[in-house]
Length: 219
Image 1 (cartoon, rainbow, N blue to C red):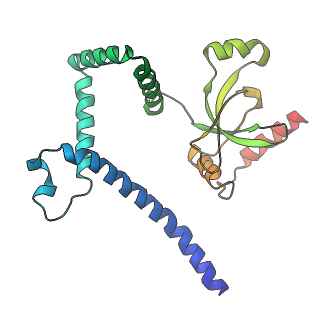
Image 2 (cartoon, rainbow, N blue to C red):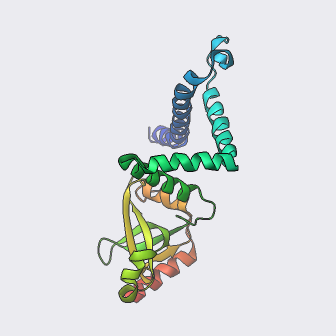
Image 3 (spheres, rainbow, N blue to C red):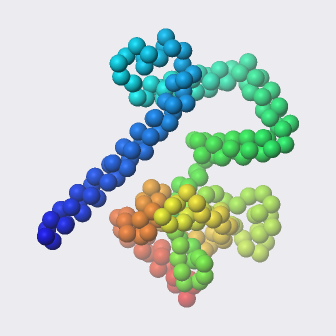
């Protein structure tokens, strides 16, 4: 029975991530199809003349339309239309806040020049002696750094995720001298947070030396 239980747990560990990933991907495709397919003319929709539904056709159409919008926006006429649209949205009290916030987030996440969340680090939180895993965002700038610069020195913005849901957490401004950067990738850091420390990435000697160096500084 012990051997059968081990076989079952091994099979569960292998199949559960595959099943959950396939379910989420299939649900996303179905969600996009439910939005896009009703907008496709009947003669262009394969579901009208095929005896079975074609999953993913709406997703393909959506990708093509989004690419065309990006192509048209790249020229002068498209930029003019977008600027007028943003001007009218900027005149709406509630809508402008939502639009500007979403646009800034998407531009930051999708920008190829940004180094957002490229490093994983450790900080002492919520008190000295307790270490928390964080994702380093960027150096503090603007009013935040100007207000803290003289007393604290160089400061970095870090994101402290919650377990097991790393999409929520806290934004903290921490002195750079108190941030212990790790070698692990952001993906490995996310796995560590989601698994509540059960799934650890490969160990590196340099990481141990950095942690010991930070502990000696505190001592």
